[in-house]
Image 1 (cartoon, one colour):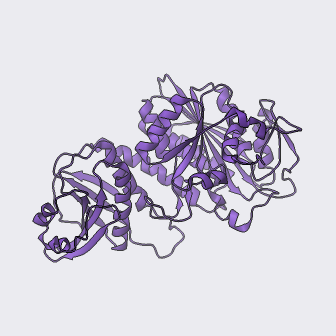
Image 2: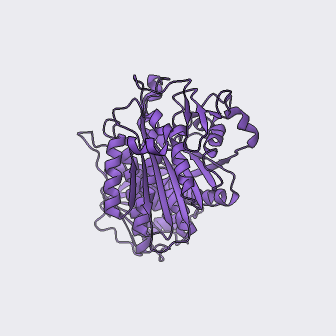
Image 3: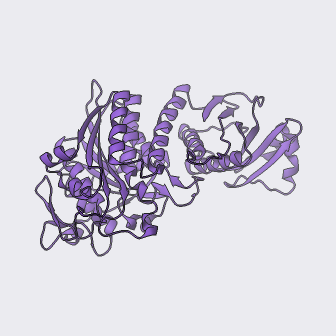
Length: 480
């Protein structure tokens, strides 16, 4: 879908005109330009609240007119809801080309327009490649303003670049687990590195054994595809900082020998959403030529039962010499991430940000609209929260209290990987913290936000969301 901006209202060539109605908007200004809509004022059916909408066909203009409640001017949350409602209406009405006409002069802040554009793109997305009958999609939306908008052509191009990578991440997470395996992701990362001039290091079974990355080797032991640790790097000619991103890439999580139930397994193709987000961020960093060295680590494996599967009661020795008792083979994510975090810390970056669909506990705590953020570094936490607020990929800060460390220790090893007796999302974060050394570290648990079982208030379709790509790109842009 193409989005363009004009500072004039020319409805020719459009199937529908969307008129956002903000709270406090003098409605006579709308009736003056669109007299055929004045009948709506009699019942006071539009007051400007988000979620409101009226659609009618104008004989005078020979196209649909849509009045959509837009909430408060400048509210980023309301911009997201407006985009979600608008795209649902356009899809229901089978509109191909639409004009978004801002009658009220504004002003419309830059962040407001960015969120509107991003969420128009996000709500345009559908994963329907396996459906023979596909719904009609919107091909173009033109935003028309009475005064020059606070967005340039370059801003629109930047949003397109970012949204392409969000779409890539969503497609990877939505794709069938028969097609997304450690092998296929190695091929994809290799092709992406070549296309976008990124540096790539691939560690498969032999290299993992040489490096002592025994978490990945244990988790992936029962799969026909050997596990992998991929290191993808954007290295500009000049840089002063190095940022390491680590993503969990369990391409399918059956739970290992601690087998999940059928219902629990339904969405487990989404357990590689962290690695997909890291790939999207690295490609975006290259396309935007961000002035930092960004190193992305993707820990890839399938967690399956079988004759070679690792077992409850096993003890794994990691490359930093710490030992971990396996209590539950379905707590595999923290094991593969531990390997990746050890390598990330060895690169001595300025910070490490890890992103993963790690715990069901975070879903119980925060639902599907907030990801959990765990960090002891106030500066890093503050920057991530700012990026979250700007992008709409929301974070909620949770603690990493040293007092809880006793819960993750084992009687027969240094640590154990599960059965923490409550607060398991926090304690899983503490576990990961054991493998980062002294590097400033943030853990983002996106188990609730990466894949939606049903639409929410700002995304009108279920499935993969691409959560993390826009958040981390915004974080990196703010650093610049």
